[in-house]
Length: 167
Image (tube, rainbow, N blue to C red; front, side, top):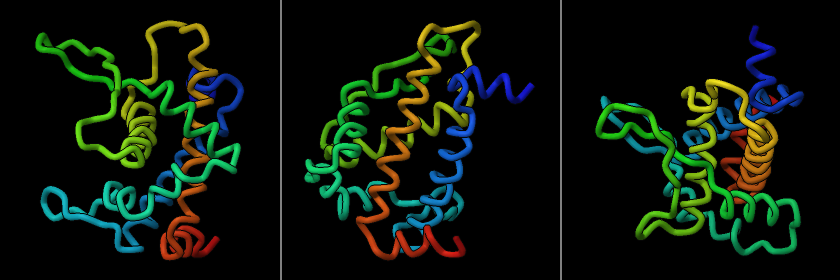
């Protein structure tokens, strides 16, 4: 059963979902361990993606020599994942995911990575029926996000060290 669910997301690249889940989870751990942490509701420790993007993210945008990074960045910015919302009548809808007012480009890019994770792990990516080309798009989104997360490791030595600890 679970194999067919994974196949519905990414075609035959079900291992990509696991790879993304582990990398994303580990990256959030590394952010918190490196001091990029903020207090959430009930004093929950949350990774501070926004601060990381503001303090370290410009390098993601400045690097034009790394083709893999450039392609991943351009894909996400050109074709951002939509956001699943609840309309006034309580129905689920998809909404475009534009850059917010005062949101820096690096913040937007890393928010898109989180939105891919949210759509996948909060159940937004399971269609009622077959969606032509959707598994290919999901694979491209996941691969682009993995590339960006990998490149983010090189932006802060403490984040990289925490990510690689015990690996």
